[in-house]
Image 1 (spheres, one colour):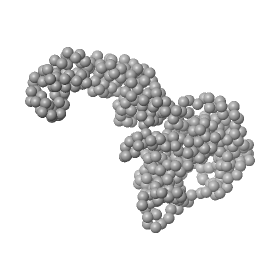
Image 2 (cartoon, helix red, strand yellow):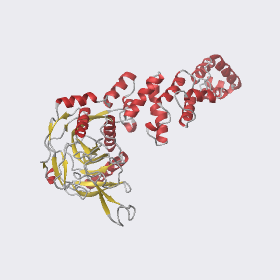
Image 3 (tube, one colour):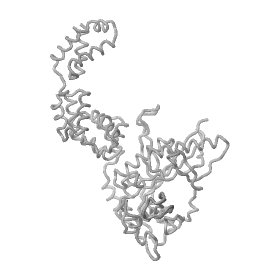
Length: 496
């Protein structure tokens, strides 16, 4: 009998604030160890936390973006546990009444590959999103590789302690590793889109924990879950979930049972390993923090933040599909990031050509070049205005598709830049397409006269002979003849 994977994701998103959630210490990344930790962060006696207003507003902004309920009154609690990089011996978090409750995030779950429905949408339920402080960081360096540490020693860096986090928890709605990654990418894009988190996974600004369980297909009851901690790569997330699901199935099919535990993913070995048994809420001994009053959010604050929200990815995705006759999948790719959506909007406005042509080139040639050179869209040497100039020449028949790719490659290599780059390269390389019907007809007549055998083969029903004749005409024109006109004229003459 088949097994079903069930996944829920907990995401820690570092909020874009200049100071920490309960102190005035800086949050900038990369400072020397322990140079951005003040008396509040290291829990000196007598210090008191003061809540960062911007962190609250960023949490509300996220809640509004996912259609959640914003609790007008929420409470901070102490979550008690011991780690060497948690100086207080507890973490200030939210438990019973979080600032954000409920909400949904819609993902586009397929591209038509592997039998899936192209652009199939799925709505993922969000349980809650609550504010909390981050812990510090333990440094386990190689012997002698860090000037601060002695040989074979570990150190504690408290720069990260007190950094504001928004923990976003889903319901167990995800049914595969790929679906989980699709959700994580959509959440990552949304957080960056609305300016809540910079999404830098290498710096730990966006970290995910995956709760993974398996059950027999058709069963309603959830299986025992394992939590895979601190996944800071989409690729590693997919690998970790797939391995953990296989491990759990193997255990159950051997007659064993799954123990609820926290596990870590080892990317070098491609496996998850047990870290500790999974704690429950009662293990943390939550109780309201006596140093912090309940958080009160007014209706006026909420409406002001709502008015400041940009058009959201889901709304823009629907608008692109509706207004520009694009597939849901293409619209989802174009709105996968704010940069991508802005590029497409600029390309469409500057070129004046069909939206589908713009989408095909942005998602085709441009995306392939970016992937090949491992660049972000912001690093593209071909601007939206420059690509628009190329697409105008493709649409007006100046260039064939093959010529257009040659011009694009030249633009990418830096042969010319700016809004008129395509026109400069076209003139410099003499890439103007032959569209004069009389000139093409002369070339066709020459090819037909020189290839009587292939003409006979075509008239005998051999379609390959036609393709060969088209190739001969294109060769005679040095690739400059308009292919559509070549096909039309050639078929007309062969029919006589």
